[in-house]
Each structure stands twice: as C-alpha cells, then as structure tokens.
Image (cartoon, rainbow over all chains, first blue to last red):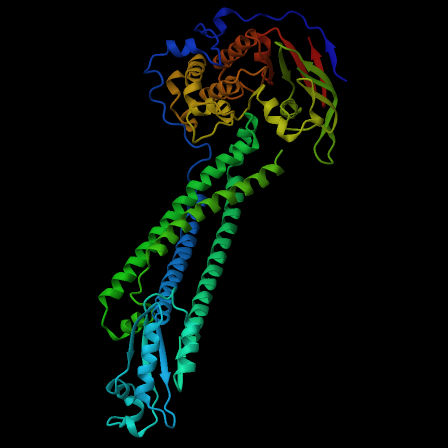
Length: 345
Length: 219
C-alpha cells in the first residue's frame, strides 16, 4: 500500500535560478487568430512543405522499387506479346472470313463451264458479296504445277475448278443459304468458308491470350507477395515511427494511410520504370523488324505476325498494367500494415 | 484524472515489480515520481500512458476503466496526455517544426491552420531559430525542449515526463523545470519521473517515491 507522509518545508527556487528570460504568455493552441494576425510573414515563410511521415528512402524501399519495376516490366512484356499475337490472329481471321471458295468437281456428263457460270451467277445475286471470280485455266494450271509439273492439259484430267468469292459485307451475307443453294443447284459444287481454319486460329489465339493472362497473374501474384514481405520489413524498420505515432494519438487508420501512400508512390515509381522499359523494348523490336525487312529470317516472322509491332491497345494495356501494379502495391501494403497494427498494442 | 487502485505489475512469469500502487493524479497538480534506477519509474509512466497494462488492480484514466477500453478508443485518450520520453523519440527525418506539429497532423489539422501555433510554441521553448533543423543536429537540451513542445502542442490535460533532465546540464535542468512549473500554472497536471535529487530540492511539490516495488507519497 502507498503511504502518505508530510514533509518539512523545502527551499523555494530563487528567481535567478530559473529561466533568465520572461516566458511569453502561453499560446492559445486552438484557433489563435490573434497570434496569426500578429505574426510577421517572414517568421515561418521558410517552412518547407511537410515531409512524409514514413521515411521516403531506405535500402529495403529501393530493393522493393526494383522488384516492382522488374515485375511490371515482365507483365508489360506479356501484354505486348499477347497484343502482337492477338492482332496477328485477328488479321488472319479477317482475311479468311472475307474469302469463300466454291469448288466444282468434274462429273460424268456435266459441262464444267456451264456449271461455273451458273455458280458465278447464283453467287452474285446474294447480298454482301463483293467480287466473284472463277480461276482461269492458266491460274489453275499454276496452282497444280508444283504437284503435277508444267505442260498440264486440264481437259485430259478430272481437275476440280475453283471460284474465288470475296465478301464485301460479312454481316449481311447468309452463308448457310448460299451454301445450300450452290450445293443443291450446281452439280458437283461444294462451298468452303474456311471455318475449320478460323476456328483453329481463334482457339490458338485464345490459348495464347489465356497463357498471357496466366503469366500476368503469376507475375502480379509474386509481386504482391514481395510487397507483403517488404511491408513487414518496412514496418519492422519503422517501429519507432509507428510507436511515436501511437503515443501522439494517431489512429491505426491514419498510420495505415501514411504507409499506404508511401507504398503507392513506391509502386508508381517501380511500375512506371518497368512500363517505360517495356515500351522502349517494343519500339526497339519494331525498329529492328523494320530494319531487317526483306531478310530471310524476318520474312518468316513477318509472314506469321505481320509487322511485329505492338498496336495502340498494347500500349494502353501497358499503361493499365502500370496503374494496376501501383494500386496493387498500395492495397497490399495497406492490408499488411493493418494486419501488423492489429497485433501491436 | 488518473487513478490507480491496488495496481500490480509483473513481466511474464517474473516477480511482481510494482505492488499495490494506489494514488491519483489530480487536475492541475504537480508531482515528482522518484526512486532509484530500476525501481520501475518508466514502467509506471507507461502504465499512466496506457502503453502497458497492469497485471492486477484498477486504473481509471479520465474516469474510464482502461481494462474496458477498446483499442480504437486509446488514441482519443492519449491525445489528452502529453509524454516526454527520456530518449526524446523524435523522428530523425522530420524537422523540429514537423516533429512538434506531428500530434496536430495526426488528428487531421491543416498545416496552414496550425503553423502559427507551432512556431509560437517553438519560440516559447527557445527553439525559434532551430525549427528547420533535423534532430540529429540538435543538442541534447534542444532535443529535450523539442520533445516537450511536441507533448504540449495539443495542450494536454496531463504531462508525463520521464527523466526530462537526464541528458542536460544543471542550468538547463533548472530552465526545463521552470518550464514545467509554468505549464502547471496554466492548468496542466505534471508528473516528472526523475532520480535527480537536486531537481527535487528546487520545488515544493508532491513526491511519489518508488522503492522495492512499493510507492510512498509525501504531500
């Protein structure tokens, strides 16, 4: 138990022992308008804008910026690659969808030329058809030359003939009606709309896009984990800051916000660096493929992917990735900080 | 304002280092908390500040039983209590001005709103010329005064100071003591933990002496 005792009188401090100057009247600490009016403008004009409460740079912070930049670079590269494949697949698909072939096989007692004319006439009546052209004898011969050699007499062989149809407006063309009509009214005719190819192409493009998304998720997932560890390290490194903030009466949400702002800036810095590096890579790739145009290796690449350059949606995707990286970094660190604070009394 | 009833404290499974403490800190009172090194002064200050919970007994802070206070209510109560630590606990990357303004910043006050108050308080504690300096370049006495200014900026009801003169020479110790007395006259209750006998001799104030885990009070 505490005990209470009376003490004898003690010596009072003399005036000369204490502060040599008279203290000014205690400032009114809330809303002291008079104090503000009395203030000379020069008294506090040198005050810098308030610095961030979380120390801006540390070794762990710089390492995390680098990790975020690398992750963001990889994610942006994935977006660019998906964009190239997607554009190429789209271009192939467009070319094929706009072209239909009618094949007329020779049969006993059928006049091929008459059937070709009939098919051409029938096709031209359909809405959405651009041009209809029967391949000439010379063109047919040219097509067969690699397999049957030159000097081929078409009349002596039962060679099927082709009609090349270009679609002007795929939306207004009723392909099934055209197919039914041609196949029923023209003897030996069959219509090929290349649907087998287009479906395979779209499946391939879909697989590439799905693969790209999976890589993105993995890259972003590992980035999120890095941020969680880095946040925990940052919280441990800034234990003093957190403790000072607690004893000056800061709420956990305030502390979390300060750390979140710190990591948002860090994420933006890393994300933008990664994004810029990816854009430079795309531009270099574009310039490189243009410079080597016409050479054997690049011709094959161009045949497959066209110009091998990232299109506008690809660049927009890069910008989206940069923001996603920054927001993910801030959100993840915010959650990690809150989890950390909930454990601290 | 703060009341302790039969409070005991032990760390982990160790012996009880503070036993049956019963006292209260009244409004506008001035008291020293003293005792030999290791007597538990800092632990008692931490309990007064609610950063350490007792293992037994009742602590009421502003009429609230701290064992019933939720974690989200602590900041509100802590804002009514200013603390000056022995090691100052200033943030090294913030200027003196920013360190002192920190308690206002955390409650969401605008910088333009509090600038004049902070500058005035800094001048009052004699740091008007050092407000742009970072703590690592401040002397021990300047750091101490910055820590005191930070504890005072929100005009707390209670000021707790742990060895506030531990790092300063006797003349500055006297100046700081005078500062605390001025504050007390202006309405703040002051608790100063110290083992500096010379300091105690200068003021006729209540003394709370910790020895062997028990508290003796000399009014």
